[in-house]
Amino acid sequence: AAFRAALANPLDSPPLHRLARPGQNVAIVIDDLSRPAPTAGMLRAVLEELDAVGVRRADVLVLCAVGLHRPLTPNELQALAGPAARGLELANHDPHDPAQLRFLTTTSLGTPLHLNRRFLEADLKILTGDVEYHQFVGYGGGAKSVYPGIADAEAIRLSHSRMELPGAEAGEIDGNPVRREIDEAGRAAGVDFVLNAVLNSRQEVVGAFAGDLESAFRAGAKLVDRQYLLRVPRPVDTVLVSPGGFPRDGDN
Image 1 (cartoon, helix red, strand yellow):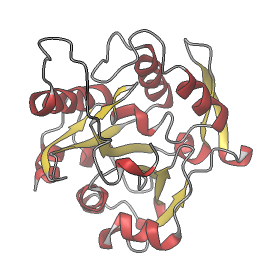
Image 2: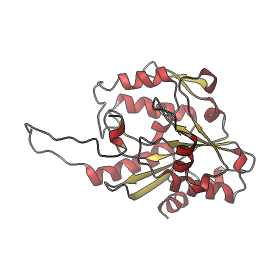
Image 3: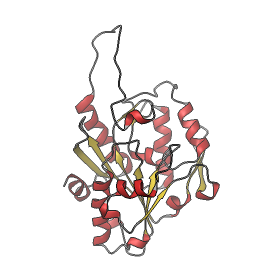
């Protein structure tokens, strides 16, 4: 219901059913297993919109943004995508395969960026994912599904190597050079529509935002702050830290 409501009230964008047309090739990017995104529910809501305007299932690609993580097995992909995605083409992005990649641009930080060819060549490009704090890109979500999600391995390594740049920290967007490069990549890729979720500590959906790449992402980030942001009044000697439990503890 939250995803349907977000799709019915997109931010700074026409509704998805007005962007989609029969005959279009559609690419939908989803998170991999290292993120707690409620992918099956988001895909179900998006596919309802596409079905309503006559987009053929044969013209839809669901692309898993694995970055440099391991590819998912066919069974994992199907379980992640959920029953609504049965019959769709489900594929892992491969950052090491030049045949899957196409040069897009050189970023303002000097990164030669290659992205998944089929995503770039799609007529309608849709991102899904969750918005949560990230240790050096500020927040997950938004254009992070594009870069590093479906980028080439060398560009991903360059992005990760910049985690110690000034401003590259959790909860920072405008003053964060790594986040700025990610958002630049999303704009250059021509993302048409985003559906992002915000979860609580029990991984329950507490908000969903759809529409323009930047507007939906920033709305999600504001909700994350309202849930979790706190000010520490003074320096302390000891901090106990957890990566946040499953699945975030899988590759930290």
